[in-house]
Image 1 (cartoon, rainbow, N blue to C red):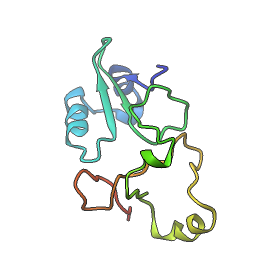
Image 2 (image 1 turned 135 degrees about the vertical axis):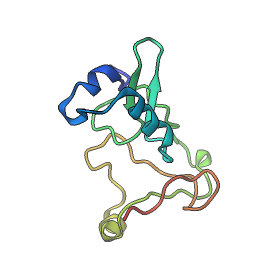
Image 3 (image 1 turned 135 degrees about the horizontal axis):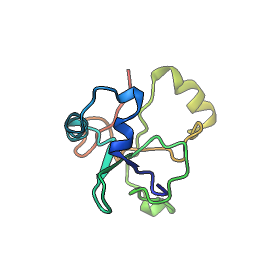
Length: 119
């Protein structure tokens, strides 16, 4: 859909998800500590989308645009691999084919921060 959702029933029919039940999918979404997925039942049927990592334009994401320096938290962090640091330091963050650059409002371990360096 225009807001990035796909019907769960259609997703589960894909060969990649062969043998995965709706219940298993719901448990994975509920147990994901980083909140990578969103579910919607309005309008029916049950639909799912990724909350981050979109390579398509998805206009209705629940993201907060930060358009002025005053809107920024005191600390912002971007989780990445250590091997990418030199390129980021030299040229800055880039969406790398994605629509958004995701930032956490603090450092790993800070309250409310569910991001950090990936292995």
